[in-house]
Picture (tube, rainbow, N blue to C red):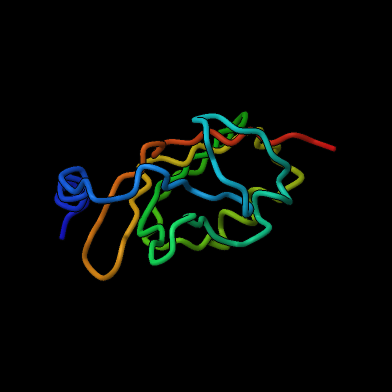
Length: 126
C-alpha cells in the first residue's frame, strides 16, 4: 500500500482517543515544538504512544546543519541507528530535528494521525 493511501486511510479513521499523545524519551509531547537534551531524546530508543495497544507505524525525520542534512522515512517506531549516530555526532552540531507525518497503528489494521503529527525537537545543552 502506498504512503498516500496509508495517509488517506489514516485521515479517514476517527476512533483514536482524543488524549492520545506521542511520547519522546518517555515524556508526552503536548506542543508542536519541544526542547530536550540529545540523551533524553535517545533514552528509550523509540517513539512511543501513551495509549495501550497503539504504536507508531511510521514517521519521517529531517535534520539540518551547515553543510549537512539528513532526511528519511522510517516504517517503525524505533529510532534507526543512522539517526542515533547523527544526533550524537560531535563534528556536526544538529540543533534540532523535525519529526513529520507520524502515523499511529491501533491493533492490526487501523491507522490514525494524532492531533500533533509534526514535532520540532530543539536540542538543549546542560
